[in-house]
Image (tube, rainbow, N blue to C red; front, side, top):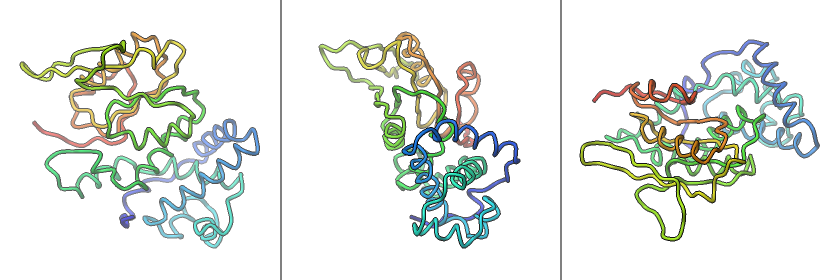
Length: 269
C-alpha cells in the first residue's frame, strides 16, 4: 500500500458529544452478542492497520486518547482491542477522516484525463477503508439489498454485502436478456446519445430495504433514473452513497433524494 501523506486523513477532532453518540449507536447495534462484540473489536483493529501508513502512533494517540504502546500492540495484532476501546477507536476515527480529501488526492495521483474509479480505487486497502466507513454510518440500518449502479463500485459493494448479509443487484446498461422482466428507463445524454438502464424485477421487491451505491455523478440523470426504477419496484431506499461528485450540476436534480457524496471534485465543461 502506498504511503499516504498525513494531511490526507485527519482534519478535526470530534466533540465528546459526537463521539458518545456514535459510540452509543455502535454499542446498540454491535453490543448485543459475543459474536457482534468480537466483530466490532476486529473492525477496530482492522481500521487501525488501514490508517497507520498515514498516521504516526502520536497521531493515533491524539486521535483516540489511547497510549501509543497499546495502539502499537493493536496495530501489530499482538492483542485485540477491548470492546470499550473498540467503540472509542471506531467512533473517533470515523468522525475524523476526510474521505473527500483522500479521494481527491487519489484522482490527482492518477493524472488521467478521465475519472475512472476502477483506477482510483485499485488499492484494495482504500476500498476496504471506504466500505468500513460506510458500514459504520449505516450500522443501525436494516439493509436487504445493495444496488450497484456501475461495475466500478462492485468491490465496495461486495465488502458491504458481507457486512450486511445483503445480496448485490447490478444495474445493467444497454443490455437485457430475453425471458427476464425488467424495470427499464432511457437516459438522454445528448441528441443522439441514449442509454438504456435495466433492473431485474425479480431481484428487487417492495419488501426490500436498499442501499444504493454510485461511482461518479455529473448531471445526476443516471442516478435519478435508477432511483425512479426502485420507486417503481416500491422498494424502501434506506440511503444513497456516491463516491465522487463532479462539479455541482447534479446537486439540484438529486436534492430531493438526500444523496451522500463522499467527495466533490471541481469540474468545468
